[in-house]
Length: 370
Ligand SMILES: CC(=O)SCCNC(=O)CCNC(=O)[C@H](O)C(C)(C)COP(=O)(O)OP(=O)(O)OC[C@H]1O[C@@H](n2cnc3c(N)ncnc32)[C@H](O)[C@@H]1OP(=O)(O)O
Ligand SMILES: O=C([O-])CC(=O)C(=O)O
Image 1 (cartoon, helix red, strand yellow):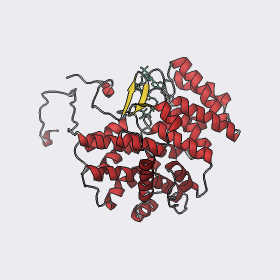
Image 2: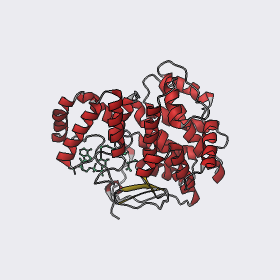
Image 3: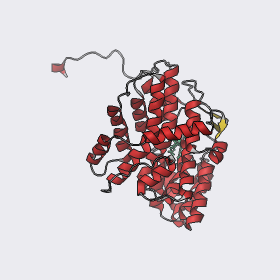
Image 4: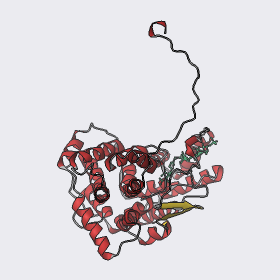
């Protein structure tokens, strides 16, 4: 038995949800470029769950169900108020999502209908939780979701209590489409491993949030913004990046396990970053990001991934940097739950082997002789 480090290149499951073939990403066979241009996030989530794009009535049905499920139990909001000051936003989300299960009487109902209902409910509730956490930690009351509004609109509205600008809603909606699913990434794999024991959907999503939190995965978008803040201006980019590369420090938002010639989602986020920069009259973050890309791609051949330009996009939308990874989760919960439903449909316990590298024939030494 020989282990493959990081399971690189190992095909661990079949799936009909999203594919990456020759660097092209599709959701249910539809190219991500088409979806990014033409689909809303709600249409995309429908596509992931049901395997086809909704017609107008089906989309309305989903929007209604999302609206009806978006409120979070009062007990969960009360618990968020008790989280220690300075709680990490992804730790808060992980804990709150886990506690949602306590207030859902159907949490352990394993019927396909109940699990689909819970998938939609989780999708509806994650934005409410993230926005509530962001307000509560500033000493403000959470704002209830607006009935009939889209997830992108509602999230921005629940953060500030103000009507969000149309351009901001559109940008966030497109970012949500781009982050919705990505084959067998680490957090989706974590979700599938968890539910393959026939554990419940809340356990699967809680595992996934824990996996997304790390900076080698979803946490990289926040780490990119930390880097941009440290660099501060275009003039500082070159010395900063050269120093990191010379010291073999990874540049966050670059590289990918699967894409070696570039992440097809990055160009959309780069475009958005440029357009938002122009609209707000502040191109500094965009210009810094382009300079970083020139240097990292030039010197290491590494291309930006989905996390790189999302940092400047979200900052231009006035979202604080520690909410970037929770926003990723707000989108990816659609993909996680689609994969969880697919796993339940054709389940087998996921239990690989390990190549043992420890000592052999070790004697047992009694306690008094150690
Ligand atoms: C949504 C997402 O999850 S997208 C990924 C988000 N993560 C990041 O942006 C974090 C930065 N990037 C990385 O750490 C990596 O590129 C990963 C984890 C995404 C994928 O990498 P892996 O396939 O595991 O490659 P691995 O980490 O083994 O790197 C291979 C080589 O490239 C180098 N490398 C990879 N990424 C980077 C980077 N961002 N900056 C500098 N060097 C890098 C490594 O140092 C290593 O060099 P070496 O062979 O000289 O030791
Ligand atoms: O697929 C991966 O390894 C990481 C990624 O880009 C994602 O989850 O969107």
